[in-house]
Image (tube, rainbow, N blue to C red; front, side, top):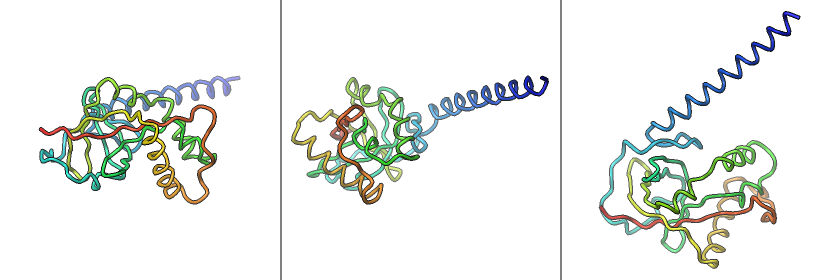
Length: 190
């Protein structure tokens, strides 16, 4: 009987410590200089601010960090370069739900449950993008044009197929979660 009580208390104690650890990590990240991997972070406190107009978005294509200025929170994202314009995608099931079962799909599904930045960006689209120690100020605008969305989806599917490996993506999902939002980046000149 005593062993059962001891085991129960130990499990509860470990669970409480795990919750405290998760809470501490979230608080730490909120005040950190940017995101850490998939964990959102605080506003940028380091980096060289670029004030010259951007004439070529190509160096920002691929992975970068971006901060929602109004929220003072940052995250890691991928930028797509299409027709000379830079787009940020917010996968709401269009790509991750097509991955084979396993850790990447489970991790992206978990992130999806907590993802709200795209809705906050509709209210205040001011962003700062940081890549290679340089910070670019801008605004993001939700893409509404169906033809452009189709084009961006196609480009993203090609990139995802390369990233996750051949034959990794299944057919486009018919049931939710199956959405994706795209935001076009416009530079804000300081």
